[in-house]
Length: 195
Image 1 (cartoon, rainbow, N blue to C red):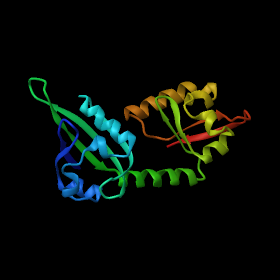
Image 2: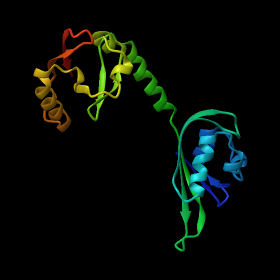
Image 3: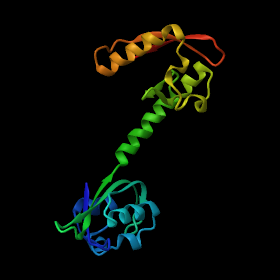
């Protein structure tokens, strides 16, 4: 993690070697750098201004370093530091290079997208991800399924069993695959196996 300390104006006073490495810069270029006045990325500026206002600032995105020109996927937290009297003393920033996470997410999405098998992810009872294979099987479009109740496709006679099994899987008491039928957009029955 890159760590930096900034003063009441948002000027970097100290930073660790990891921040220098992440940004592809130098300590000489970073110490004295006025973050709110010098960054070009509006979301990064908003994050530091939030910290300067006494709140937590958050940034995530592809950031182009002003001091090196390097573009880096970053996650940054800025937080204010105050004295016991409440006087604002400046703040700290924690900077994480999320390049590896971005590569893993891209590989995951490529794998899911190219799989001939129907794959879906349900969170909080709603479809959050459906791959092209699942769309082919069901006949629905991505727009018709995303954020919809996952029980939408389950044939009524299977609803209770699917709910019970899902609860068991979430509790970790049953990890066995199970089968049920669902309705396709053409109302043709299909069988699904959950693993």
